[in-house]
Image (cartoon, rainbow, N blue to C red; front, side, top):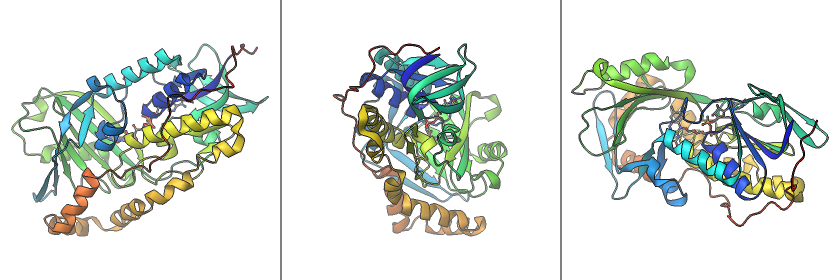
Length: 390
Ligand SMILES: Cc1cc2nc3c(=O)[nH]c(=O)nc-3n(C[C@H](O)[C@H](O)[C@H](O)COP(=O)(O)OP(=O)(O)OC[C@H]3O[C@@H](n4cnc5c(N)ncnc54)[C@H](O)[C@@H]3O)c2cc1C
């Protein structure tokens, strides 16, 4: 059985980011994912907001052109066009981004175990023993475990931490080779029929078109809604004849960051920690911010900071920031669909709606500011060589 300082379960954005930082700090990190490759089964559109683009070193070659235009429309045809003088979004080529981040992690010394799932976890002799599925070795011993295993995290339960209870489901198709005109843009449709509780979208990322719907799982059938939404779009081409290159989809936690996200055995990052904006369902910026804090806290904890170090990683502290957004989400979710449709159509061109939309789409508020990673951080207690245990 191999041993490591930190086992990171899940190689989405949160796991890749956290694993690399910890390895750069000198920790022996094993990163495992049940997927065989990081560029398979992608679950995100990949829209990165200005705040993330400004604050994080994302590989420029993986990011699409700048987007300044947003259209917010209703199914009845009313529309609000928003334009920003600045680049507000870029859509990443997610497969390339995940591959590049994995390369960075490997360069930092991360041990990568693709096609390996974490089945269970138990505590023994001061170590966490992970039972593995799909691997030659049946188990892995780690001083600390990081659950980066997404919206339906099983590691959360294995660590006895909080877990997500409120989700929406998103699904999208990506088309390549369409005769695109106009600048890259986000076109969002507020349709309780196609997307109850969220949005339908048609996004021109400068290279490809993403058509998607999201909504409360119990209130719609995502694939049928996606089909109906696509058919409702007035476009000069026949979808049947066009090349669909990918279908993406998954669960999105919208109940706000979870209260209890750290224990002496491990902690949660990304969707597993519920770190997603309840209103916009954006989780990429929170992934990066929380991962940096998680890496910092992990180093402090392993270097003898004890439970005091973990106190810095307390979801209840961040939940306050999510309160208004959660309230608004629940309010909108509670309004009957026909009433919501009429109210949206009537208020779309009001000044107050326009101001709110600009704040939501172009504002810098998503995840609270947390202490950023410092590249000088080093793990002092790293064992010179961790011998394998029998
Ligand atoms: C359709 C859709 C579109 C979205 N679009 C956007 C967007 O444009 N912008 C935005 O900001 N947010 C968006 N989001 C949300 C955002 O994508 C997520 O918040 C973010 O990607 C979560 O990253 P993560 O690393 O926490 O989880 P994930 O990317 O889900 O990664 C979790 C990983 O854990 C692995 N795993 C799970 N269980 C185990 C196990 N037991 N053992 C080993 N490995 C395991 C999985 O295989 C997976 O690779 C979207 C979400 C969806 C569903």
